[in-house]
Image (cartoon, rainbow, N blue to C red; front, side, top):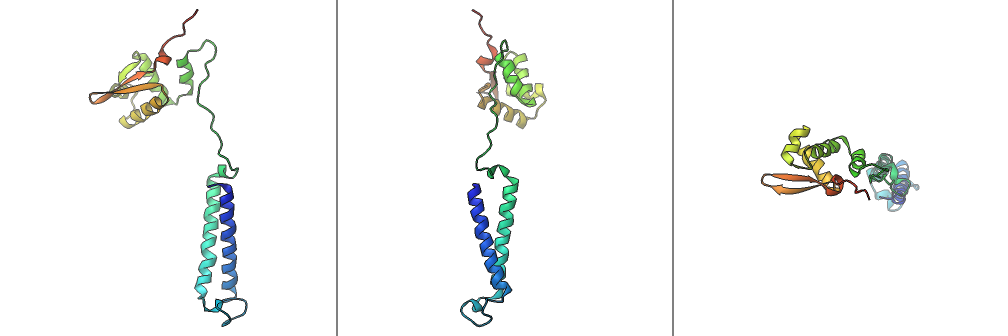
Length: 170
């Protein structure tokens, strides 16, 4: 939802609530009892018309407080996680700088074992649970850092070539 939509909902709910309050407070309208069709509407209807929009207003304000980025009308952009390779630094070093602890542990284990391991062996070497290992490897594969291929009852995980090859000097 955009902030304009939230403001519109707030205004409509407040107007409906004020109408409900006025008719509830004046026992069916300004003309007293028995005048016009408004008097035939039960008083509880006006109470509901007063309370329900107030609940909507509270919900919308709570939503705006929980998600403050909507007040500006545009979502904040997260900084890019694309590492920049500094002069003389290997691509592996640049990637390791932006990984979280579990991802770094998995990549370092792969590097230490020559760039290729079975998923179950990565699990045992890193001490991560099966689910955690799977999720970390999924994130790494999604970014192109590792690749996975089915290997019997597990996966064979391979570190990306662009991380392992060294720069050739002219």
